[in-house]
Image 1: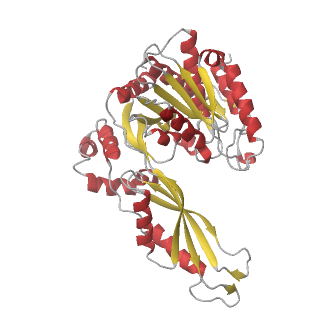
Image 2: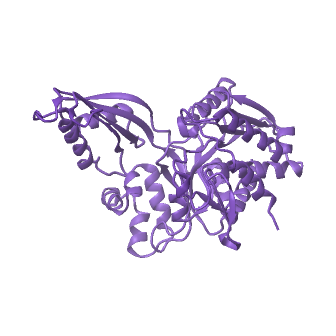
Length: 441
């Protein structure tokens, strides 16, 4: 027997809602996707106020019974590019339902990032509307159209709410998930982002004498640039623990016995040794202990037999809360330590403010997680990626980043990669999470 909620999700996944520059037929894809939303969720579109922001982003207002502080439930409509659909086990926009029982899954670009969350939110709201439920205060649904391409839509929605004097008591967007065996011997853990790293792109530029490759000069632009890149690679920032990571380790320690549990429960006391230990454990954990720098683009000569006069490298920097764009640039310049390398700031945003891992808003999220995922530890963490929620720090003290999905390692790796999919059971639990959270608003 078909599952209507799953069929509605499949319909959403069939639209290639790309937002990257130069995407073909982007407007038509978004228009078709939004028409699908209206067909799939008629009560939402009949009873909630809806407006379009920044051309394609959507903002819905569900009026509450009282005038208390509102909540904002977020997701984004766009998906990342599929470069080669022949590498997928199932076509990325066919939304095929594959497997049986616990292994039944919907395959498609956006299944996890982020149409799964968008669909789950709307399923929960539609069901509550059918039951004539009314929240105690206003609930906003904010669906940006270009999170994967910088988030101008998400920024515009946040600015609009600020202009109207709206200060949400709770904002929740994509982020952490329910992870099994985050550490050996540990059961399921729901990691909720209480902040996220800042993001910055800088360009390293070297200009030296060039010429014919048959007569290379020593110290050319590519050699100088290569030394700079290697210095960044070989001299990462020293690891250290910030408050959300300490909170994460302490929470994990409550479920672990022996020396490991004892040490993690005392993470604040042992923050130095623990920082060095977890930085050696995995790249993911290491990224939570420092500002990271990754060279993503290199450019030299356009000809194979010409030594370029100008060579450049783009460095993508993810800035740990507590640092700033200015301090990250200073650190890069200090490590490179070469006046021949010019640093040019391209664009960036500062790290997000840190929301508390306590209080009514946190408790509502944590209790809803436990309703949908029993026997799960709920812990704060630093989100390593960027999300549209970073624009809400100016209007809310309680901004959380959590995808209510229990994800296996291979499912995590498929995000932004090939064979993205979501298990049906996972999607049903996500709907249950949002239903439980709405019931607490």
